[in-house]
Length: 91
Image 1 (cartoon, rainbow, N blue to C red):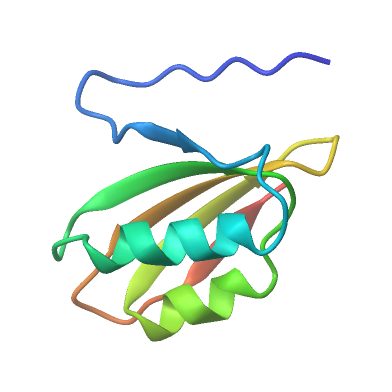
Image 2: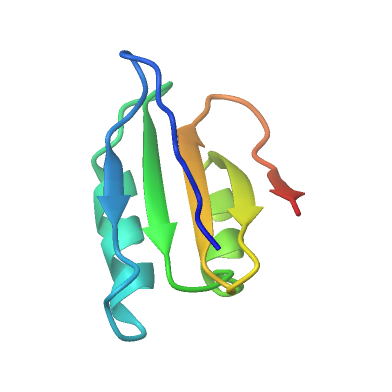
């Protein structure tokens, strides 16, 4: 199965963490998101659904959109927001 990701010119750069062993993807996302300004966004490719990461991002005031692939990998779009954070999942 193939997946095609098409990004608009102003879309955040894709950070591919899918080949890293646990817990490096979690740590990589947290470090990158710590540098995000309010309203900033990042896109990550992770090796699987980041169950432990999602609550940590929410605690940090981030809104997340998670797109899971059939092979278990996922794309995670993170935005640092000023308002109530939430996590949405798209199958």
